[in-house]
Image (cartoon, rainbow, N blue to C red; front, side):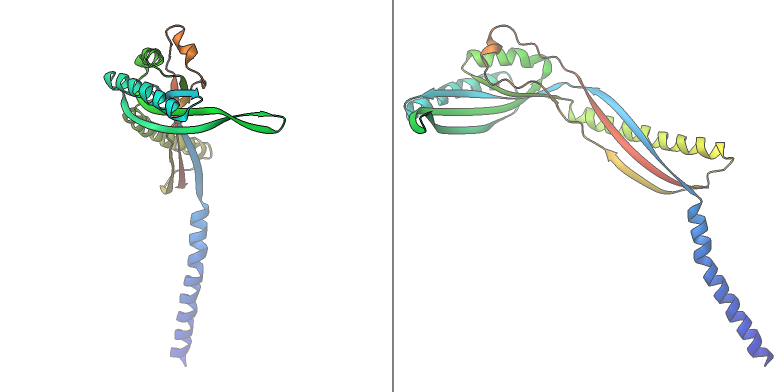
Length: 234
């Protein structure tokens, strides 16, 4: 009989310890602080990505297309001689051109377009734009400015370091103010270091304005930001 009572007490004791473990674990998890740090790095833009090309209107489709092809070849040869990077065709189009009068549509000719895109250092882009117009470019559709890939990657790392240090500093200030001591970092959530968006320049439909004088292109800055969240037990 005594043996059975001891066994019963032992069983109850073990059950009690097991039932307390989730409670202890919950209490331990409740003694945490969660902080998020932000890091920002600003880097200069050094690369220009340009889209420009030739657009011709005329009455005869084949003549319009031939004229666009000739001017486009001159444009491409110029860009190659200036050692631009990532030169590629970004669009070719031949479409009818209509006039509308009294709800009547009349074919008046055709519009042919050939667009190319390329990259080059910002300090060279103004001169290349002017030269492109002289050899036949009639459209400057888009110019975006950005930093080099290596500079962006380095800035992302620095932004992550700043974000981590910021989160840790916040936690230390709060815990010291409350007379508490940090024990260990429970979780680390890296929200990442984002790639910055290129700096957009005003879009120009026609390239005629670029031929009036030297076209200045001035670089700016891009912002790389990062976020890190720490959960710290105390």
